[in-house]
Length: 189
Image (cartoon, rainbow, N blue to C red):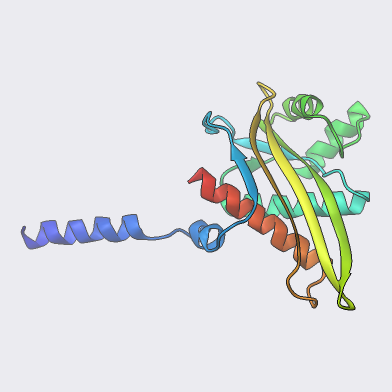
């Protein structure tokens, strides 16, 4: 093999072996999230609307959905519908955002020009006492619905207690959502 072919082969090997920023961010640790990704390819989903999640309070639902927005943006997988556009369409339709059924969410996604819509539930968002110390516990379920077919494209859930007592509830919620998205990202690959 001549020097030019060797240099080309080495360059290809290096480029193929390089991890992307997303790989470093999402693929670095093992996720314990329960993940389902439909065997049907999700390549038809380009634009996505993230609805506020159903939760104990509206603020918890909106905040958790915002965490998903950030993680989805970091993944680079989808284009997102702007929240202002969602609010405009929903106020015109006099619809509540949180706690929509899958079929209603898909209908709203179509109205927004989205290919998919993400809905979710925050099942747990509290602290529990262990040996006299409060530990945050967060549980979240999320799924993406294809707006055309109404079928679930992916679903992910995770619930766990923080390992450290110095962790705040919002910090733990961020870690939970990140671990959920890491699990999804690893399945997408």
